[in-house]
Length: 376
Image 1 (tube, rainbow, N blue to C red):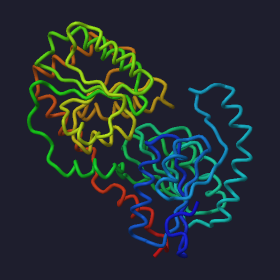
Image 2 (image 1 turned 90 degrees about the vertical axis):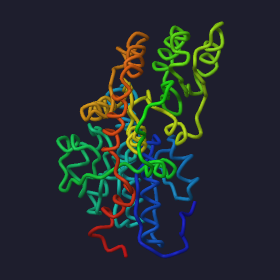
Image 3 (image 1 turned 135 degrees about the vertical axis):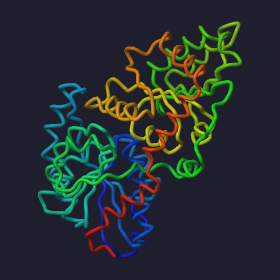
């Protein structure tokens, strides 16, 4: 597939991004920002044959190349790690061939399995290179790559201690256009009655969160009616079961359950409190929309990065964090009742969350990448 403007001659930039939306959406935002500054810029992406990038990147009109590589994290099986090691030489060769053919002005890693071999080969062939690290605790690949690349662009100050880059610069996390538009509005100065609680665990849902929220809502159905309203994005796997549980009681809890929410910007606008995981994409939207949150980090996240992210938010008073093992009906009910009694806590958390937001983050990252390169 040809990238946008392929017929125009111009310099190349190569982005490595894949796996999850937290890697892909920011990369696409930066790509669009770069193209708005340099219209004839040729931006190509590298990912794997199986990641979400295969659905998202071609849809936006950018060329996507594949590198056959898997995961090396400790939270995956030994078999997968061995298979990844066996594939690594071929992945490096393919990365070298791609870089030799495109001759990119810079190679940028936004995360995903392909970032490792592509960025390493860029460094070995002396191509300008950079990594964008959105987590408070960098993953294994970026900790290694930071020693080789020219620039490290970070979101959290805490991540700088784990990186060994020649140049480390603090930037933000690009958010979707509709979320950015909501960020331009002033944060709420009052909490609603009933208290509005938005619950989600990502696009696929989170069973650990779903189970606790369902049981608590059923137990508290009478006590919370008129005092709490919950919007619960369940995800496709558990939706039918959860919906049946909510409808099985003679006294339905004050909950609206959805398989998926397509209007997240409106849901953020509605909510007083968000109960969710602590991926970087979610945190960036909490910051942009200035929403208080109860964060339950994904226990199996690579290098425990979600807990580190949540701790960074909690340390600044932007959220409360509870580990999955401690999240139960009693603890969830306690948090909700405490916020009903002390709504001022939500206002303070909302204001602290906004401090993590950097407006026009995609444009700032684009400018950082352009700086020092003769692209225009």
